[in-house]
Length: 136
Ligand code: HEM
Image (cartoon, rainbow, N blue to C red; front, side):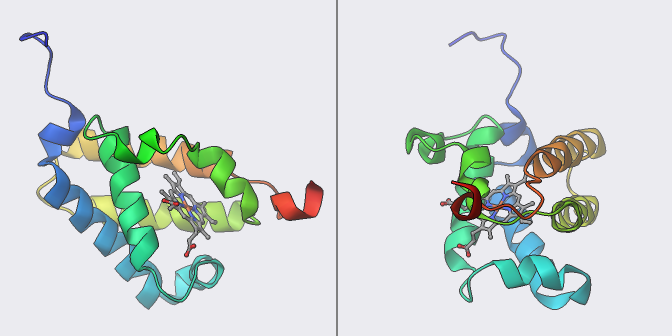
């Protein structure tokens, strides 16, 4: 390991407990705020598995343990199965931006960079409601 390498964003934000807390607050917000009803409706009744999946994804994406990525799946391809309109992508991006902004412990520069990058990713998933099953 290069001793001079800067710490990863994963280390800088506080590792797994902080990532998990962000994901929990993100899905709690989606569950309780009617502004995200469309996004909530697309998910299964039990948000437990997706809370776990997003935690593991973000851990690897931020430079931490890569177990989610080692499954060999691409997060963009996986979302082709869902009908993602621009409104739903905006709901996702907005819920994540609010969640991150509400975390006083996060370095604001790092938080802004995360929210911006995730927002771009969410908007890259827009498929105008043409889920894979409908177009394959
Ligand atoms: C940066 C943007 C996003 C990321 C990083 C992300 C990440 C994830 C991850 C990691 C999972 C769990 C998959 C697994 O581990 O097998 C998941 C599931 C899911 N995502 Fe996303 N997602 C994003 C945006 C969106 C958007 C924009 C929508 C819809 C509008 C969406 C809808 C879903 C649905 C419906 C599931 C399945 C949940 C379930 O089965 O209950 N995601 N997402």
